[in-house]
Length: 125
Image (tube, rainbow, N blue to C red):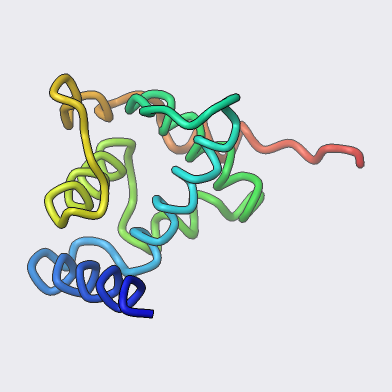
């Protein structure tokens, strides 16, 4: 339980200092990271573009045609917002980065309207 309290405290500290994104945005990025890593044969470092692709798929899977609306409600409007969240999590000691990782890795990778509105399809089960 101590570990969870520490995680929550760190997220609350980020929000108190910045407040640009809602708590759910940070939780979502952590879940999307797990989703992305689970697609690989074995755990490894994930690049910014790989994470952004995983985020897009995870958001569409979780929220369907409302993905962009939900992300916007949390304060996320562009791919660079995900980078800001990731680097805030790094600064808080929740995530780690490689020396070559930079915020620019998340800049203008895809446009939300194209990625979430036009990218949504209903799959037959």
